[in-house]
Image (cartoon, rainbow, N blue to C red):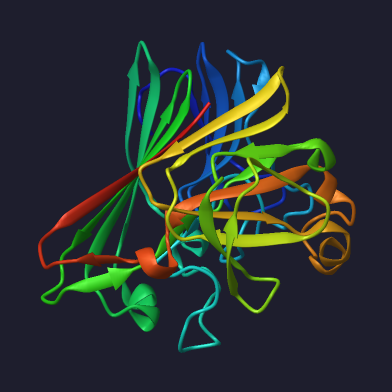
Length: 286
């Protein structure tokens, strides 16, 4: 246990999953060792939660946690060649190692690490080190670093599958105007978005391979969440009514309470990493 104030380690109720809790002058946060996943982040600065978490999670080891910021890695969605491989990769389903906790006047920095193992090599035969730095302060900031420790160049995709609290029917997303997207609900048809803001009137599932990396989720002037990322791609998703009824780990009416604005590198923007090189991506939410 790290001797740092404002930090505690606990288990989620009636589960076997360890979580680390952070409390400081700026925020209260909860993150799971499984997936190095931020589950909750309450901003004391804005006096509002910045993430949404489903109440129907089972919190069983190896089962993806619905909500917060799961990491989809080293591929996004279904595997392109193996239908039996886990959707969105293995990183969100494995327990990471907590390697450091650092306290400063700006808040706390939490560092998790995942390395290749017999489990990961079943799906991705690569030697790697993946680190997640989580900064809990006035803003929630994540920095992902991947080192290629293998003897060959590698490629991967990833996404921070962020769930944000929102009154979906009045929510608007800015920052994607004049951008090309893949409509996953229309046979992956490539289309251009000309409207200034995205509004939700039905199920929506779009991949934007190349974006400006800055988005605003707005319900009114008092409820705005700003998202910035150095990653180039984005995914906008809400299951709406029918699909929510088919998803077991959310309430039937939960579509009204969240939208996903996911940042990553997918589709045409997958990443190629040479032997011995390291790459990093950042996400900032406030």
